[in-house]
Length: 116
Length: 116
Image (cartoon, rainbow over all chains, first blue to last red; front, side):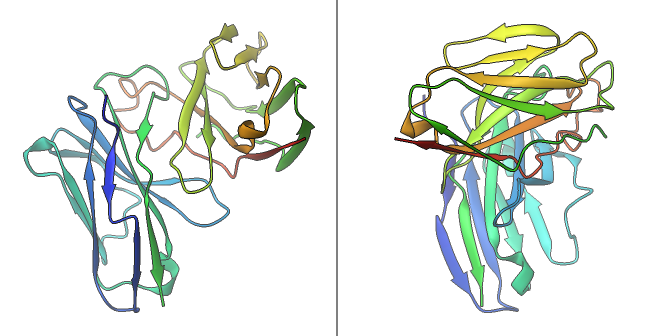
């Protein structure tokens, strides 16, 4: 079974530039999550989709971050304009609908962003 | 939100059993306890989940006392490849939390280093 696919794996940009990350979840998984993981910290939920609707985006900095999940499958996370503090790994995860307890969440390998 | 406390780091030797304890004093009735493992440059990977007593799978065991205020992840006979960060998460099923995973908070985790 193919896992969660993310791209690009690495991205280096200057501050105030824009960047986009793409995620393809596991086939059939209705729920998709974007997490931000700063070096030395645990992942922090940014946004959660159920099919193509937003379940929770309360921790997404909406002045610069946006995300969409068109057609309820692939998702894109965009940052515009980027700040130095956005340097982090952006993790995409997916799960089947109606999971018990905390998951299981299936994570991709992440996209590492460096803002200079 | 149920807050978790874990040791920052632990060292062990190959072949030993490792026990990582997580404190969650304000765990709610509906909360489950879930453990994830994360290797460098990879996304977290689900290890085990439980609600009470003991859960065992092919990878680990999870011990939860009757008061559920703590839990212990047990890794039998660790090898060098078990060196990773281990996260303890506490939260309700998404079917109860209005579907949001925001309450499933990753802390800073426990860095386990297995020595030869």
